[in-house]
Length: 449
Image (cartoon, rainbow, N blue to C red; front, top):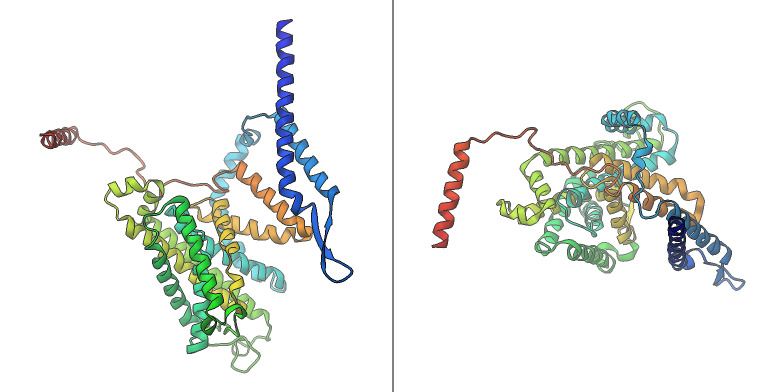
C-alpha cells in the first residue's frame, strides 16, 4: 500500500509541477504576443491609424503554448531531448561520409544556377542577395568565429565600403574595378581605428562598444549632408562594366561586342558571378589565413586570451588584424552592394543588418565556412518562403531558429577543432625531461633565495 501511495503522490507532484510550469509559459507567451498578435493597426474612417484588438488569435497562441508546455513537462520533464538516438547508425555514417561533398555540391549548384534559371529574375536576385550575405558572414566569421571577438557593429564597415565606392565614383570618376580595392582598404583602416580603443575590452563590453561604433557611423552618414547627402542618400551610383564593356544596347556594348542579342539579364548574370567570385576569394583567403601563424593566433585568442599572452603571442596585433581583415571583406561587399543597387542611403545600414549577419554566423557555427553558407541560404531563403504568411513569418521564423538552437546549440555545422594539430603524440627523450626539471628547480631555488 505504501508503494502505491508513493507512486500516486509522485504522479500528483508531477502533474502539479507540469501545471505550474505550463501556466508560467502561458504567462510569458501572453506578455510577448499581446502586442505582436493581440493588437494590430488599420486605417480608420478618417484615414488615421486605429488599434484593433484580436483576442481570439492571442488566446489561440497562449493556449497552444500552455498545452505544449504541459505535455512536454509530463512526458519529458527536465531530461534532454536526444534526437540522435532516433537516427539509425548506418544512416548517420552515410550522412557523415556524404558531408565531405556538400561544399562541392553547393559550389556546383551556385555556378550552374544562372544557367538553369536564366529567365527567372527573382531567383537570380535572390541568389545575389544570399551570396552577398555569405560574403559578409565569412568576413564576420574571422572576427567572431576565429578570433572570438563579439562585433555588433559590423554593418559600419559595410557602409564604409558602399559610401567609399559611391563617393569616389561620383567625385573622381573612378570605375568599379579601381574603387573595389580602395573601398576594402578604407574599410580595413576603419577596422583598425575601431580595434585600438577596444584592445582591453572583452565580452559584453566589447559588444557594446562595437554596437556604438556602428550607430556612430550611421549617424555621421545621416548628418554629414554636404558629403553623404544625408537621409536622401546617393543616387546614380555607376554600374559595373565587363572590363570596360557596358551592359547596354549600344554598338560598343557587351552584347554587340560578343555578337549576342541584347538582354537586361546580362548585367544581372554578370553581377551574380561577380559576387560569387568575391565570396569565393573571401573563402579561400580565410582558409589560407587559418593555416598561417596569424590564423592559429586567432584560434588561440578565441580559446583563452590569458594563455595566449603567456605563450608570447602579441594579442594587440592579433586583434587588430582580425578587425582589419573582417572589415576589408565587408568593404568589398559594400562596394558591390552600391554598384548593384545604384542607390545607397543610411537606411540600408542599420543595426538589423549587423544582427542578421551575426545570426548567420552563430546559426551556421562559429568558425565553420560551410556552416555560414548553409545558414545564409536557410535564413534568407526562409524569409522569402515565409513571405506568404505576412505578419506571422517573423514569428514562425523566430520559432524555427529557437528550435534549431535547442537541437544544435553550437550551430548547424559546429567545429572547434584547431586548424593544425598533432596527429600523434610526440615522444620526448627522458634526458630532456630531466634537464628541464633540473633547470626549473634551480630557477625556483634562486628566486626563493
